[in-house]
Image (cartoon, rainbow, N blue to C red; front, side):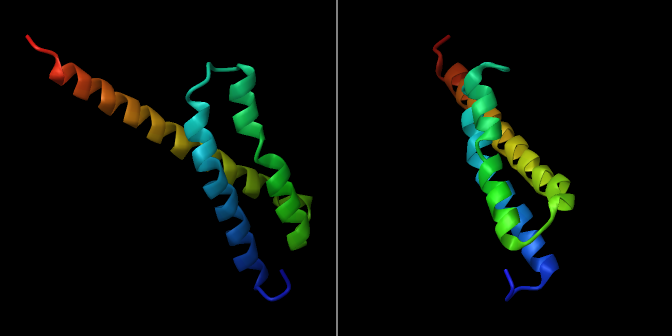
Length: 98
């Protein structure tokens, strides 16, 4: 991204990695831990992040930052799904007749 300041481009790249991984972390919660689907939704965004990093002109030294953004997105998506499940379960428990 030659038209953008390098630090702004890096921040945008990390933020995109974060945003892409929120829905993936949300969907990942539907799968048993360490199953194929669980691994799939964790790793499917990595090629996109690599492509964007290379096209932006950043070297391999920035991999930990971009992966960190992806991990944060996975955590936010997973927590959102777990919170929604908890809320639905408590709403169902409250609707049961005594």
